[in-house]
Length: 107
Image 1 (cartoon, rainbow, N blue to C red):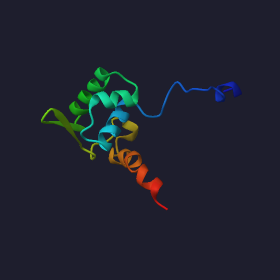
Image 2 (cartoon, one colour):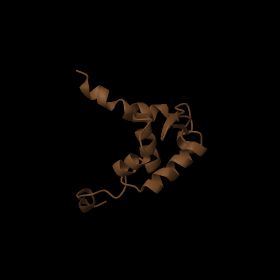
Image 3 (cartoon, helix red, strand yellow):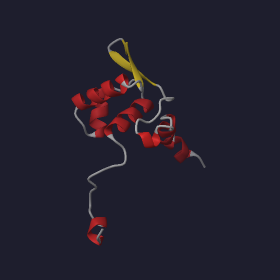
Image 4 (tube, rainbow, N blue to C red):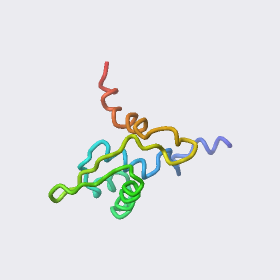
């Protein structure tokens, strides 16, 4: 790669997928509205709904209706889907991103 590649102002890819981002936002707030998830991530509400349906179908989360809102529960014992990480539970990912605020406040 040439030096011009390293000086690009914006990246075209990220390390986390939208599925991971949705899961992390739900982990931080199990009662979050999908409208808010979509806005924060920069996807449509329909895309957020499809991602939640994927995660629910795969067993990563369950959705329970509480009044007019949904409450989400994550099964953190589930493992990553890719064969290269299939021996790693998703709680390791969740702990990195859901506890970072607490670590930043520690002395």
